[in-house]
Structures are given as C-alpha cells and as structure tokens.
Image 1 (cartoon, rainbow, N blue to C red):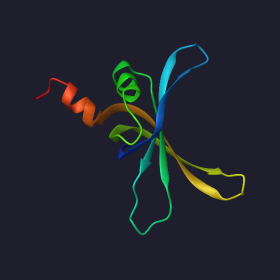
Image 2: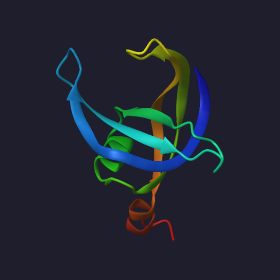
Image 3: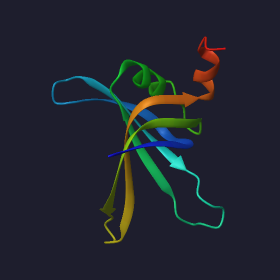
Image 4: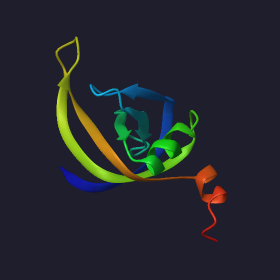
Length: 107
C-alpha cells in the first residue's frame, strides 16, 4: 500500500458494514474527476475503522466534495464484459469535507 490523498465527490451514500468480529466500519465511494476530455470514470472505495474518520464518512452525502488521506491499494478488476478496469481502495486516516471543516474548532 502507498500513502495518498484523493479529492473528489461522494458517489452514493456511505454505508455501515460489520467485519467478521461484528465491529462496524464505514464505506464510501468517491468519484475522482479526470480531465474533461477523458471518458473514463475513476472511483475510490474508502473504508474507515477509527472513530474520527468513521463518523466523518457517515456524515457525508451524495455529491459532497471530499478529500481523504490514507493508505491506498491499486489493483485491477474485470467486469462481466471481460474488460479490465483500475480499482482503487483506501483505508482512511483523515477525512476533510466542507461540513466537517466548519464543524471543527480549529479556526
């Protein structure tokens, strides 16, 4: 895995899931804008276990602007049409969105 920061827009609503030990985690998909000429869409699946990022992800709504810092894994997945697509998965350490900026007392 590599450390990375991604900035984009929330695609769909965040989800709460549970691991095999019944511990909750948050999952969100982020759409990354590429160049206007590109027809390719790139998504990052971000997961959060720690209290801070977990609650910040769950507070997001569809189309919110968001930046996420964490460790990223790059891989490839094959669709039903047998085409290969990039897959980006991230473990979130820090989540920054407009609502979370104004709710913190860091100013």
